[in-house]
Image (tube, rainbow, N blue to C red):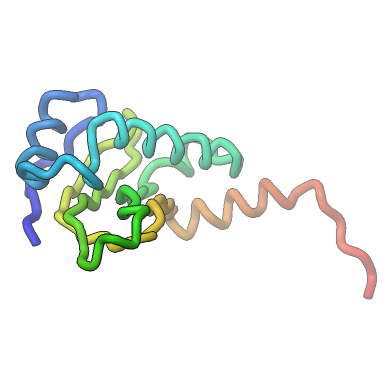
Amino acid sequence: MSEKTFKPIRLDNKDAIIEALDAVNGRAIAFVATYRSLLDAAEWAERRLDDLGAVQADRIGAVAEFRPAGPTANAYKYGAKSTYVRFQRRSMGWYVIAITEAQVYPKNPKLLKLSVRPAARDAMAERYLRGFGVLAA
């Protein structure tokens, strides 16, 4: 697998991200990440943090993972080249921290995963459950 190693790139640095994607994607155009798909994935992660009630301090250090979906047709008998991207939430927004070549297979769903620090998870859970009481057994 080829991996593009670089210093973290802020998501709004379009030219640098496209250059990094091109280095990993090569000539592939199907089933690979694009700049637009990375923006969509970061927006999804930010909305998810909003839905979970994450305050600014909880967001810092969060990591989102993204990989496009695989082929929808079963005619593909082998894996297709794809792109796996990791983002990290910092105080100034989302940064791309890794871009790696990946393989996708027919009917593989899109990968969108969000992870937060344990302390942030605990704080979000406590805020979310604050309004709930506990019934006697």
